Length: 290
Image (cartoon, rainbow, N blue to C red; front, side):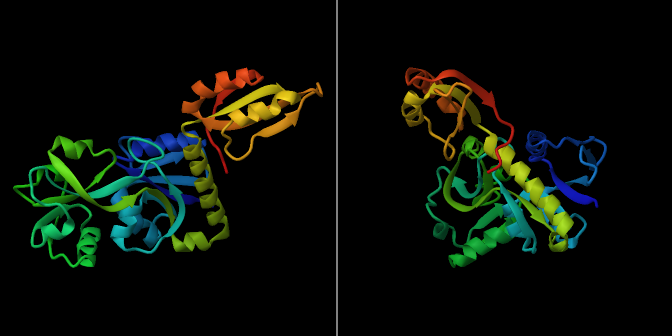
């Protein structure tokens, strides 16, 4: 069995390959080829632009692929969403937004103010549907790129993707509404999803990728504590669910293992020591499978 996997080429490529590595699957690419190899002999990779991924997955050229929810919606094609993977080109754990933005000095405050105006965007169908749902007549022009520089001379407003809004601000644009939020998805071809062997492989891939994303920004913490001090120690810990508590060879002592946000370790570890914990160890995590 061979699983044909689409990896997004372009802005998401670097963060996607890093995510695969954290999940335990190395993907080897070449600047001269659109094909990539992996450590798993059952997975073949092809580099495809995120905007086209849904088409090739829906048509069966690929069994599955990673792309944004935005491009799945924009395509209007029918694919299976196997997993939601919240990461973007700059960070893990962050959704991106397609926003309606206008020049800073313009009088526009809401979508309705743009009736009869020109909107530039790559996300043409979604933008048309957005304005149509609000009964606002506009002309939506496809933008081949550098969309932020088009207002006010080439368009009255734009619908553009953003993570932080910094690029829009740098081009003197002001966000007035969010058109849609998007995150990366692992999508699958319906026929491949109906194949038990391929579906299991796709589900396992999604499981490991989600585990790598969840581990980002978290660390493991283990410590020893006397039974008499256990309640005080547990009162300090913000657990993922509940800490694991196990007995040691000395019946008076217990071992506690849990997961915490990395940013809280600085504050929590002295508190644990004060509550009676000993042998406190912080360790990194690659994956957390819930």
